[in-house]
Structures are given as C-alpha cells and as structure tokens.
Length: 262
Image: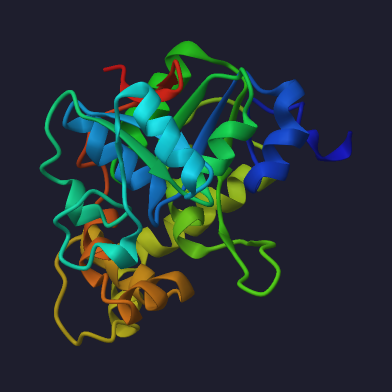
C-alpha cells in the first residue's frame, strides 16, 4: 500500500487507523499521548507501579480492576483535589511501587488495545530519549503513533500539537531511514525547540523562561489542548508533561500492563 511507509526504518502515523495500516510492516509501536495517557504511564512506571490500559470507563472497568486486584483510576473531573489516582498527572507523582492501576483513556488506552500482539511502548516528552534508545536496541522497523485528540461532535481524530512534539522528540533520537511523515514530526519538534524566543513571545504568562522545558510548556499552553486543560483547571499538568528527558523509564506492555523494563 502507498501509505505503509514500508521502505523506511522509522515510520509515523496517527491513531488507531495508523496502527491498523502499518501493523504488517512494523516490529514495534510507540504510542504518544502527551496530554495525558502516556505521560501518566511514564510517571507511574518510573515509580515502580504497573498501569493497565482500559478503553472504557464503565462497569466493565470496575469488574476488570477487581479481577486483577488493581485500583481503578477515577475520572479527572471527579478528582479536583488530586487525592485519588486519575489522568490528573499530579495525582500520580507519589504513586507507590507495586501499585496496580487500571487507567481508562479514550485515546492512549484505546490505542493500546488496537496494537494486538505487536510489542508496544508508551512514550512522551519526559522519556523520549530513553524510549528511542530502547526501541533502536531491540527493533528495526519502528512506528511512532501520535494518538491525537477527538473532536467533540463526532469523535473523529484531531491531530494535536503536543503529540507532534512528543513524537518528534522520540524520532529525533533515531538512526536509520525516516519516512517523510516521521521527518515532519522531527521538524516540528526542532522548530519549537530552537525557537525559544518565539515561544516566549507567544506566552500568555509574561514570565521569563530559562530552558527548553519552559518553552515547551509555553507552546503547549497556547495549543488547543493546552487551553482546554487550563480552562478546566489543570495547568500544572502542562508543566509536568512538558519536561524533556527527565525520565529514564521505558514503559512496555507486558501481560496487559505497562511496566518499566529498564
């Protein structure tokens, strides 16, 4: 097929359809859902917890968590103070080692199920270098899958800036031939990484920022997804998700749960 990118070592495509289209030419998938699933997974496994993706937040999720002896994360809107585990990243920063957490998510979790038996890694800005180095060591045909968001009216895919940056950050560390789609992601990442002054000019905070981490926070705050999180009161999550290569964790799906393999 024309869209399989089969002649390249490093491939990139969006969402569940991307996994379905490139499954036959991929040795591994790297899922990128910066706001918020893959960042939450990185935080949890870096602490030694295990995260079980689940596509739905309904009675079946409750039953699944009970069956495997895990805690079920609540919805973000039901966790305003961050005292329970949810997709609110700050609620997971102190999650204890050995915790088993079922984490429903309409994007990252749902995509995790679409990969079938293919090896699956969860990547974000925080662990981009570690994930890329692990994937290069173990696989040749690597496909990065930015999850994207969903339009509210019909649930169709909405490509989003933060997942472009996350995908581009990971792809920037790869050696080997890159598809044009992969190169576009890296170009977007490098554009914003190198243009800190431009990012600062677009910042609504008016504060000075002194590192590339802060520039990504500014960029994502001004993206559609970032503004949505800020409107809902989750601005601190953007700061957490925007940090680049502060984690050495590599979350790999093993027996239905993401664990740190490093």
